[in-house]
Length: 414
Ligand SMILES: Nc1nc2c(c(=O)[nH]1)N[C@H]1C(S)=C(S)[C@@H](COP(=O)(O)O)O[C@H]1N2
Ligand SMILES: [Mo]
Image (cartoon, rainbow, N blue to C red):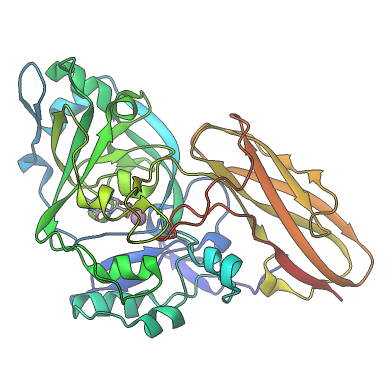
């Protein structure tokens, strides 16, 4: 649907269309520390780097110059090795296009489904600066404050990543047969901001484990570590990684939520067990409640499909023809089908899927909708992936991770 004309900008000295960028929060020095992608303003499959969402659990570390950076690979290897960026770049490379999605993206839709809370909007309205300042000032939000905040949407983007398969790096160090997991350690170090986890719970009146000062780290199970599409990447969207996205080298773990994609890598430790990382066994877990004794680390994402056009906010629409369009992706494999209903689920039609339909990237889909009768309409869309998984796959869980439900778009035809 035609949206309000976006104001112009100067691009390389010429008056041009305004470029899409993140809705950012900044620290006291004016440096960006978080951001949400302007999903509804974007076209195509690849999110431009300046529009890519940004999430950091710990403080953004000071940059390390690529010439001073070394990656240590040790633990259960034939020999411990240290690789410079140049060394990494000599190994057989690979380029992969994939969706990065924060595990907490769209968590507010769980509340909307369960308790009739306000339906979140995909027009990026979160006050990221407020969140950034609370963080800088070390403020703990009250449960009431959390309840009145707009919840996380637009913590999703898609990029093209160039690097080397983690498997190649492990091979050059010589993997021992007892290897079961690979601990990926970032050089960012600090005390986790518990308000991040409280926001994910939707309340702040529960006691949480405080791990003290730690490095950001994840223990990747060996099968996923050896998958040829799991990369150590130094490049995103055709240029070297920017600091905010984990330079010099970050992990790319396609299909698994963003928290697995460890940025600012400094050490890779091969282990004979999955380590008890804070960001794997306390935060980023599935469970029924904080007391659930059987919490499970979250891994692959569900199956997702979002409507980008029209939005509830575009209502009312004129009679005539409209193109319903959106994006679909899955944590397990390529999207095979997207079905759309304009009558609240009574009947469904297949949407057109635009090529390419790459395994880890989202696909654009669309359906032409001819509508003559005025009234209220409920548009639904649901995706199926190549493994046969139909939306939704992920049930409610207490940290509200990996939402993949079907969200209706409600519009009036005037
Ligand atoms: N070293 C390190 N890596 C990290 C994080 C972090 O705090 N430190 N945050 C993770 C989370 S929760 C997400 S969602 C993604 C976000 O990646 P992006 O900021 O490049 O979009 O990075 C992941 N990798
Ligand atoms: Mo995340």
